[in-house]
Amino acid sequence: MFYFAIMKGNIMRKIKELMLKHPILGAGAIFPFSLAFTIGILSVIIEIVIPLLFAVGLTYWIYNSIIGTSVRDSIHEPFNYIHTKYYSM
Image (cartoon, rainbow, N blue to C red; front, side):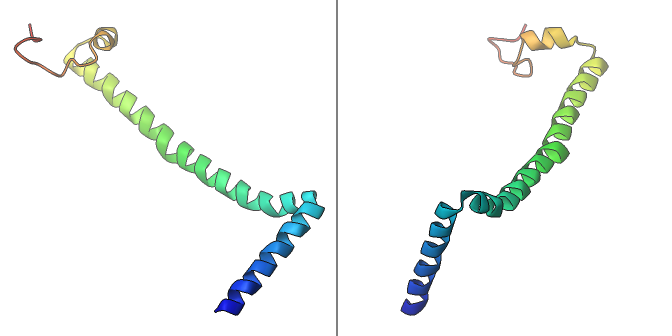
């Protein structure tokens, strides 16, 4: 086990030295992983987050059109769903 740790240290040192001597080669080795990570994050944002935001906005718009309130009026009252004896009219 100890030998494996020493061997791993030697390999990491050799990789570090190689990347320092040849920075373009090192960047070329890292680029595919960073590209895959970026594409994965952007696909989650594009496929899940943006449609979710559109669905929430559409739901809000349809709800307000059904109950007959204006979107402008509801923007001015952000907590219009809270009714207390001090706030309600």
